[in-house]
Image (cartoon, rainbow, N blue to C red; front, side, top):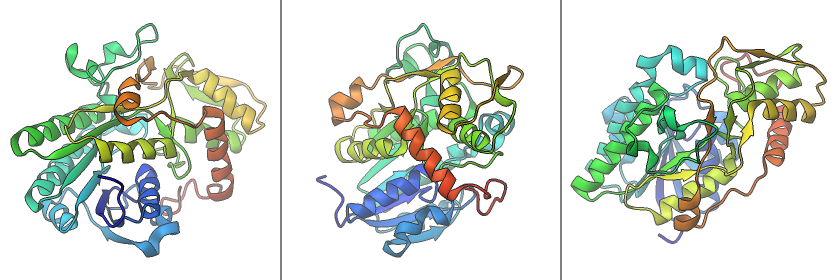
Amino acid sequence: MGGFEGTKVLVTGGAGFIGSHLVDRLVEMNANVRVVDDLSRGKLGNLQSCKDRIEFVEGNLMNKEMAESALVGIEMCFHLAAIVGSVEFMSSNPSEILQTISINYNVIDSCRKVGVDRLLYASSACTYPVNLQKADLPPLKEEDVFVHGANPDSDYGWAKLLGEVQCQAYHRSYGMRIAIVRPFNPYGPRESFNPKDSHVIPSLIRRAVHRETPFTVWGDGSQSRTFEYVEDLVEGIILAAEKKVDADPINLGSSTSVTIKELAELILQLTNHDTTISWDTSKPSGVSSRKASIDKADRSLGWKPKTPLLEGIEKTINWYLKNGIGKDHDPELSC
């Protein structure tokens, strides 16, 4: 594709955490960017730096007509919109989470109907079977999703996996040019720090900055994850959109695994919060381990993450200190 200069691009969910960073990068590349977002989780403030260089459409993609109208004249669609939240939210609101299936259908079918040249679908590492996400097992390869039988660890994972199946069906039926990426635990500036829906890194940062004592962490600390800095993820998304057209999923993650205990201790250290950690094993803590094989991304895209975890968390903490304090509990202002 040779870059996106002059390309008419739509980013669904473009006012959200990952979406807004992607929008910034596309604007830097001189793409003509349209964003559609219902602002249920995304924030217009996330688009502050490029608001005069994009077209913004407020709309709910559960509405098929909205999806079609947003895609008129578009050459490349980056589909990131989904119903998502904290571990507790996703475990408590299964019917709401599964609305993502309808959103995916509306966007994918509308791309076909209006003749969009390419589509990138943002799936998730949550698509992988629960039984393969253990500390003593090897990193997850893309083909592992179905080889041992589909068994995602959440309704969110099922919704994302069904989106992949939809993309592959449209690729086979209509020859649609589609890329599929599976991000692994992205983090960074602009992620939600709201207590109601924040993920583990922003949650730990917020509470460490505010000197929570004792410092309570869900689980026993032995769970492990690979985290990737959002700007690295965006570069992987761009490369996949340029190079992949076969609806063949590709992992975008880090090859370095860290336990939640190590993560919590690092965040306490970086925020100079000297306290003890209290482990709450009564709360949901997800699978015991989730680590990515990124061999395919390296081979197919020439992509590897560049930002070490310590550097990325320092950047995220600094962003929160500058932009987030005092806004955590305000649903209109929360970052």
